[in-house]
Length: 200
Image 1 (tube, rainbow, N blue to C red):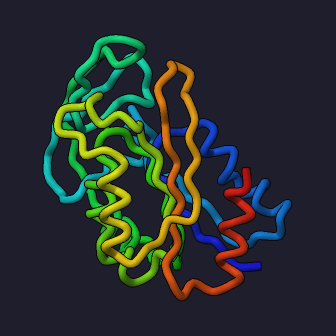
Image 2 (cartoon, rainbow, N blue to C red; image 1 turned 90 degrees about the horizontal axis):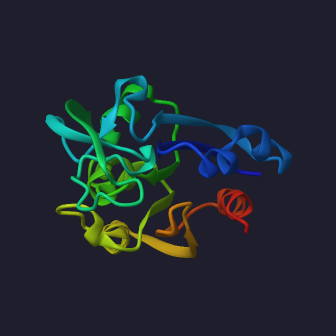
């Protein structure tokens, strides 16, 4: 079975369960998972974006809705609890610093998912062969949000093809979409590993 080296950028919850290394081992999938940030907090001091600079970060009542993009609603967990400044990093810089052969990327970051992907441009060209993107279907929830459609367009421009789409509703009744992509020419072993982990 292929060896999946997974970087998960985003919230902790159901996604952790899917990418838990113990679950992966049950399916004989080798590799490991690294969570590099948790929505609403600066876990490991990392907040991801398309470039490196100081940005405002909005912490909301429901931590999964916290974002670099300003929430436009105060209902159902979107009310801003705190606003502070954070130093952002790109995924490319994180991947270069770790040099651990990462080949699968999960981006579960509200409002700025496509910006995070843009910060991984080099890695998407050179080493990442599979991507899962998770975001709200409604792009009007944050100021300047591009929506999951823009993430899809960006990945397609990088040679990725969508292989699966999963729609769900979160605990606050908001529609969420998971899109899973792979790059053409991916090895059969890695393709099989990705399909097993993402089986629903």
